[in-house]
Amino acid sequence: MKTLRLTLGGLLFAAGVVLTLLPGSILLVISGLVLLSYDWPRARGWLKFCQGSMTRSARKIDAVLLSRKLR
Image 1 (cartoon, rainbow, N blue to C red):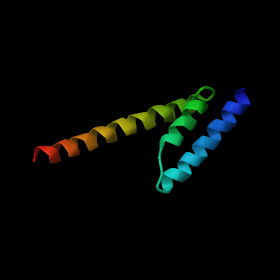
Image 2: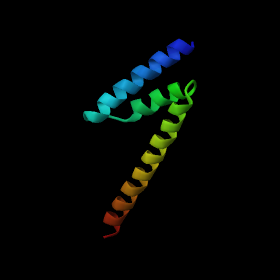
Image 3: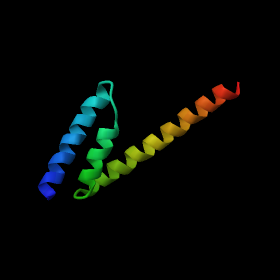
């Protein structure tokens, strides 16, 4: 089970990095890090970093869209 989880997590992470560089979604990176974080503490740290970055960027986008709406 551990081997399957690590293999699938690595594949999702690699595909997510490629699709992030090309027009795509970062959700594959997040899902790959979730699977890898079960076994590797460093992946857990990167997962927290990515989640925090996504939260900050979503708040900035919400603020920009709200300021446009109120004009």
